[in-house]
Length: 179
Image 1 (tube, rainbow, N blue to C red):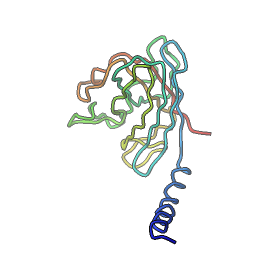
Image 2: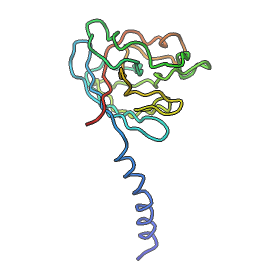
Image 3: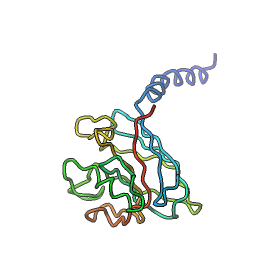
Image 4: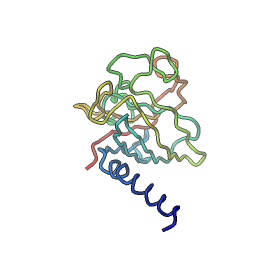
């Protein structure tokens, strides 16, 4: 057997347990609706030892940079009212808003997403600030009242209070356990 084949086989075997661990990781799903109640895509949240990976596949959004945040209550029952039933950001410690804020971030802060000209988004985000079921220093998304991902009309400046100038809520998805 050639050395390159042995190295490739060894590398593949070394990565196998990590791949299996990812397959067995706890997951949650999210189905998004817009303010008219239309289905605009979905996502999968995957627990990791250091936070949660958020994999989104969306369509039907206005092009441009859009803020996305984790909101404290798992409901999107009020699209006509702008999804206010989902509450404010997940923020049990009362931190200031903003990934760039020295007094923050709050647990609901995420990077902006970029919506393509055709209204689609395919992105993976990562938050080290949360956990699906809760972990030391990371509140649970799947607690007694759940959580939601909310997309806003504008981009987040990652500093201004209370929501970084993100503006009205234009889409929402409830985070639910997979299965």
